[in-house]
Image 1 (cartoon, one colour):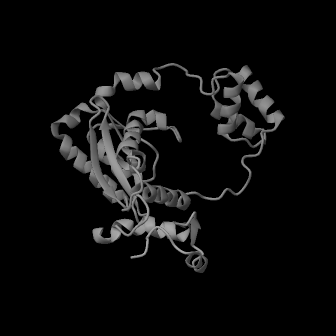
Image 2 (image 1 turned 90 degrees about the vertical axis):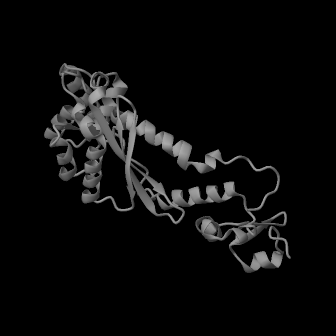
Image 3 (image 1 turned 30 degrees about the horizontal axis):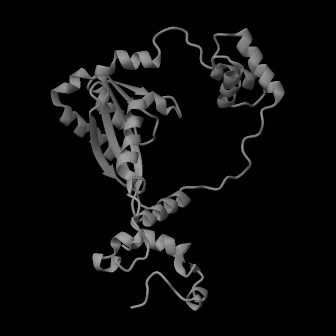
Amino acid sequence: MPDQGHCSDQEAESNPQLTTVNGVLTPFGADRAILSALARLLPRCRRCHLFVTPRTLLRWHADLVKRRWTYPRNGPGRPAIRPTLRALALRLAAENPDWGYRRIAGQIAGLGRKVSPAAVWAILKRAGFDPAPRCGGPTWAQFLKAQASGILACDFFSVETVMLTRLYCFAVVEHATRRVHVLGVTANPTAGWVAQQARNLMLDLGDRIGGFRFLIRDRDSKFTALFDEVFTTEGMCVVLTAPQAPRMNAIMERWVGSVRRELLAHHERTPPAQGPRRV
């Protein structure tokens, strides 16, 4: 039987997807994609003919997922903020200490100058101003600590299969006990499916649902009015996090991060190979 890890120079020249390094067969390009996507579909008796380790297959699959969801940039980035706009934003902040960055951006827009609230936030932050001065009341951290026993938080996270199919997992966490309810996994999270998972959660909680007063969620379009209605009919208040502010749902985000690191990132936990191996 010929050596599965070596090939002749003529074989490498006849196949542009193969190359040899010190006489060792090294696939790249489309061959890597095919091997990483179809390796798990091979029967065990055929896997012994592969000339790569499990760590290599997982790394190829991670690269394949990264290339699929990486989009080309259309330009060099955001244009620089004009010094006159920067000076105007700082002047408004100094003269009106109770104004937040959104109001300042609105005032600048009223003068016929175009600037985004995010740019105003960055300008104020660099200059030492508070971008969102508080007018009183508890902070978000104080609210979470005081109402922990009555808070539920939910979120979606996605995972790529071997064949690059994206699956969405929906989970809910109880802030007081950190107990997590994994409600379902689907490739197509429709509004009806999400609302049905909320109803299933109500059944799982049973009589304990009366002890919860708040549901924290982000502004994902998967959460519709039908979903919110399931909780509002139980007397709960749906609290929306600010756009692009994952720290407002930190407990849920921390659990998702743990799942990704400890359960889904298999290539990080694969033990190093001890000498030459074949799969």
